[in-house]
Every structure is written in C-alpha cells, then in structure tokens.
Image (cartoon, rainbow, N blue to C red; front, side, top):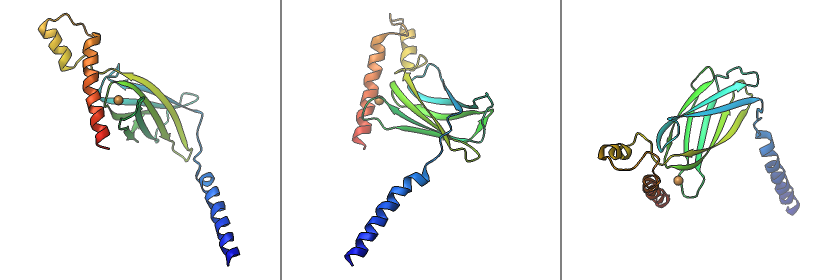
Length: 173
Ligand SMILES: [Cu+2]
C-alpha cells in the first residue's frame, strides 16, 4: 500500500514537471513592434497607443491580437490594460488611460496569426502630470500670471493631486 502511494506521488511530481514545457508558447523574435502615443508628448488622461507590427522585411502584420499591460515604476498603482485585434496595414490602435503622470512601463504582447506564437516588447515612457491643454494651464493664460507652460511648481501641484489618487487605489485593494 505504501509503495503504491509513493508511486502515485512520484507520478504526480513528474506530471507537474512536464506541464509547463508542453504549454510553452513560441516567441517570434523576427517581428518588429513599434509604439507611438496620442496625444504626444503623453500626458495624464485618456490616450491611444498606436502599435505597429512588421516582419523583418517591413511587411505589415494584420490579424494579430495586441495586448498592452501598463505599470508605473513605483509601488501602489493599479495596472492599466488594453487590447485590440483590429488593424489596418499592421497598425493597431489601443485605447488607454495614463492614470497618473510619471514613469510608465508598457509590456506589449502580440499574439500572431497562423499559430506563430507571440512577440513581445517593453517600452518605458515618461508621462506628463498635466497636459498643456488642461483647464489649469488655460486659467494661467487667462489670469495673465507669470507662469509659463513648463512651470515646475504647477507640475508639482498636479503630481500631488495624482498622488492622492494613488492613495485611493491603495485603500481600494
Ligand atoms: Cu503612479
């Protein structure tokens, strides 16, 4: 009886060891992934990630599913995900939201057609705390105050606002 149980345990360990290898997805290294963002330069708020997939010879790749996982470079933020399978000439537009200004890390995963596996790329971006078109900057122009668009103190104020959002998301988890 003990021998039977031991044999079962060994079988289970072997089976577990084989599992991940069998499910491994092939990674295509000959696919180029390019990223541009709208609006540019990126600023906190709604955005569109424009991802272009091309073969090494420049041929655009349609028919893929493109997923984006966005994380900030500090603790306590809720990641932002986006996905699309619609494209034109290899260009995929993924609706996205920069939930805070600062450093972002975007992991782009393209599930390629014809069972070619996936292609991945990581992008690091800096997102402005507030866009030049925001209400605050418009107020500055209207009031005639001596603050230009690149004013550091205005930027810090807005980063503090976003910091409060961070605290909210932490307590919500
Ligand atoms: Cu953040």
